[in-house]
Length: 425
Image 1 (tube, one colour):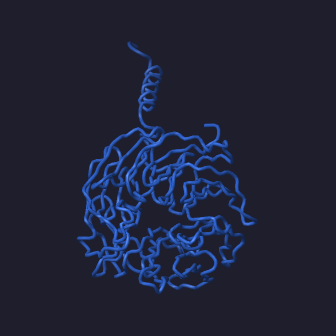
Image 2: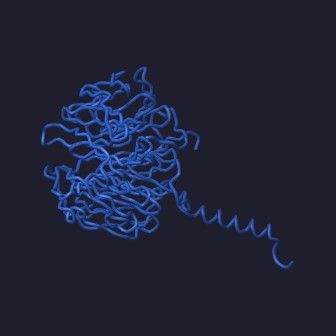
Image 3: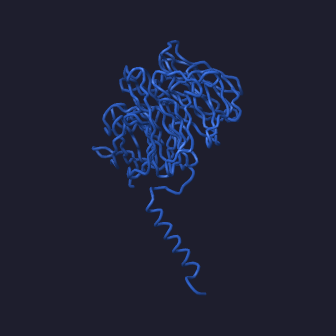
């Protein structure tokens, strides 16, 4: 037979493919999110849990290795990572910008921006608050003025956009739109806070078409989460008024539970956490925490307390039978706590700890404080145990980090930094 034998052709083709992949950003070619990705707010399952390769239990006195740094603009929107690409949403001067970078190196791949004149009532920060979501090769962003975008992950090309505040008559809030989009099975869910029963809205994720609207609840700063309760898939919204469970297909309200402070100025911010038949809610402003048991459309209050785990803006994490999270108002100096999930009993508390966010990686908490300190803390109920500590950014750090493939991506209002937490890479 003339030419190369078939086995040699296969070898050449495979070699060429490997060379091509080596020239691309790490992970290009994967379609679905893997266990090492962080494609949305609070990670793959929107519960703050990292399931990728094990992270190190220690690092040098100088801190974990810094892979790269990049200047950024305003905002509290966290980075997301999928298929070797990092997506950042921030504001530079009078434009909200979506940027895509190679996660390993920080090399720019594309950017997309559009005009904004948003300012909050306190002159606090003009940037976006909501973290992007990545689903089936598309990036979804929700700007501070309620502009919803769908872009191609590969190129940054706009697929569709919608000015939700104009369409649904949303009143300007204290600090702008902050709900991170949730996408599942081709539907995108948002706590928009519109009028005429447009408090909660579902969109066709591919086209932007409105699928359903329900409730008159005003928007909170909390992002929705999906849960299976009683064998039924449902989307949980923590609105300004409280918890609302909705059937994702029909928009039918399955149950409601009022949970908010009496103060008009108070706004719920933490994401609801579901574990088995239970849902955990927490808010500040003398509201506190509540553990609910869901049986069909019936709710039972298991425990409630304002002294256990009052989350101001940071969502807690669950490991086994224990909750770990920040207790108290951000401006008063928060405590880091471990609480028994089924009773609300405080098992340990590190008082005067300061504000921050946390994620769960195996048996460790990855804690990022507002002052730019990164800590590894044992996720165990016996006592607070500090494993490692390093300052990786200047204050003030409020955006949630992304933890993907053993790398942590953290930003403040001026800089984005990538650090390596995986041993022996």
